[in-house]
Length: 139
Image 1 (cartoon, rainbow, N blue to C red):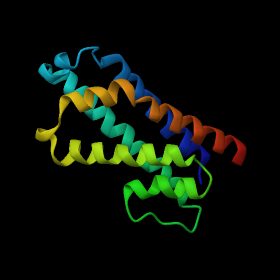
Image 2 (cartoon, rainbow, N blue to C red; image 1 turned 45 degrees about the vertical axis):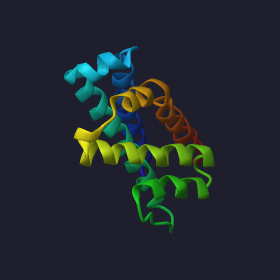
Image 3 (cartoon, helix red, strand yellow; image 1 turned 180 degrees about the vertical axis):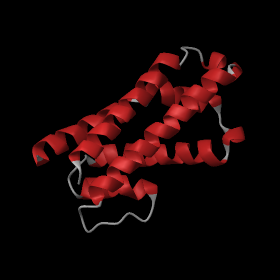
Image 4 (cartoon, rainbow, N blue to C red; image 1 turned 90 degrees about the vertical axis):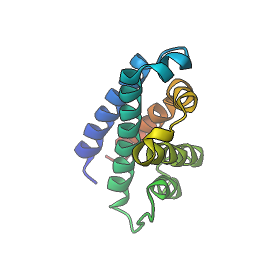
């Protein structure tokens, strides 16, 4: 595992998180009517999920474990005691939102996107912390 690669990905993840926090309106109706906010928030949620997957698979490349799906990558990190089981489950759920956003964009429920952006974006913050702690102990 290349520590610098992980650290750069964590910085990118932080930027996505900040954009989501900066642009998420307090009222879900504003999001449902503002196409620019929709694009900014969904794009950064997609990026946050993808960066997290990239981090997971990069770390797993040093193990004998090969995930069969994007969501399994997080579960394998938990089995390797790199992140907590709860974190793995939360991050696995985020893959579902990413898949809907990428493949079925027109069917997105903006109330759900708003709730995720407002109440669950910190899952990415905590994921980043758990990864950072693991990397610092690994060095």
